[in-house]
Length: 269
Image (cartoon, rainbow, N blue to C red; front, side):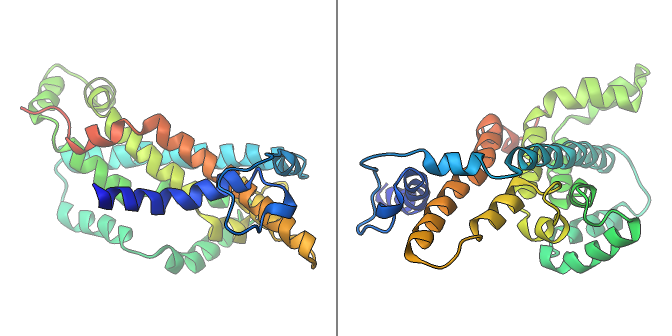
């Protein structure tokens, strides 16, 4: 119990300092010991963020990029997992190992190939270059197949005998009992997009195509020399951190209840 408490404090303390620091005045931002509870909270840092040129465009772009990556990723991963789980394929094990190998490739090792492919497709520098790579997720495919393997094959066979098409089987038989794993795949793909700073910063250079992650991060570095500007930079950076953390928390809280149920699998025979 004590270990859990210590770990919780170590994990939560930096987040709370970031949140509370976003309400502290410039002059008090470097006070020691740190102020975990601001004496005179201020919203000026949040007003600064809202008034940034392009903030609302970045917000819209973030929604487009996140949904544009997350929804197709979940659909494609579920379909591939369904095929591997319920269909007999020639060289099925070989194809499965190839898919799994993709999960062990470091993201950094894929940047140059992705950059070349985006250039060849003529989408470099656009939001499409950020959306398309998010459609393929070996990790989600693995989750989908493992979950579908727990669905009784007799349900699928009965549906086929009754004349149901593959789409009808997915919609009326598989999907209703697979909402937990669908939610988990959505969380994973959504968080991956929201945290993919390196690739987005390479591709989204124009202010009109930047996401919140890129736009706010660039904004946090635009401060000149001087103690007062340094303090302002720290305060604004903490506020930007809150903004970037917020969508991740929303995604997690909305689907958090499905995590445990997804680990238990679907219905048993």
